Length: 220
Image (cartoon, rainbow, N blue to C red; front, side):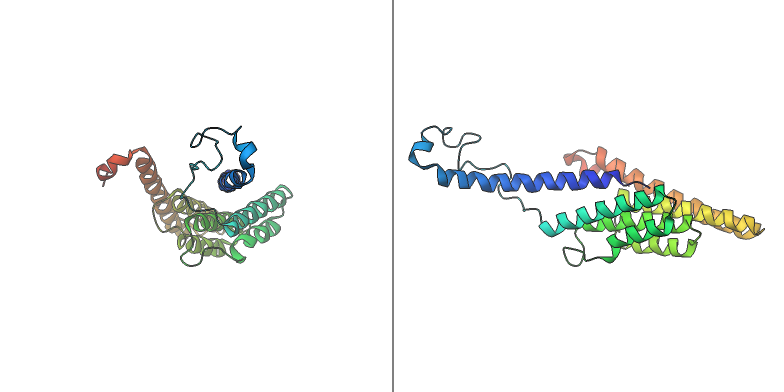
């Protein structure tokens, strides 16, 4: 499972960080213009004028530790991609584990950006582990991921989707062993997991379609 969305997240946060730096540099420019430079500057208060208020004024500065964490996660996913290209699933697992095992910024509970990346990484680990035949390990990764994705989000829904896929692989393994009764039991668990994924993603979609003033009109 490739994680292109993670690249976009890192890029967006890096852009936000650049914007904050630009605001800081504008004030430096204002202080360094001097009398002669000020004569050629835009009118006070105009967009781009030295010392003019930034659109980002008052907003929280992006945490450099968070940016480093996201960059680390992106690099680890790229390593896992290369390992998957080589059909080396153990190496892919080891790469993604660098995300979940390393230091996490933001304290406890984890900030939303950190929690989402960890939940996403756990989902990928579950997919990789189950592809290698380690179904129990994959299901442990799902449960660990759900502790980071506790509200109805894409990431929680994706974890249940992957849980269904993991259980499908267990069904196939049970059928190979001739355990049709066990396969039928697990089939019910897989259907439940997929239903949970669908219900969560429906809530995410419905929430996104509501306008800011329609919060009270959300479906039950």
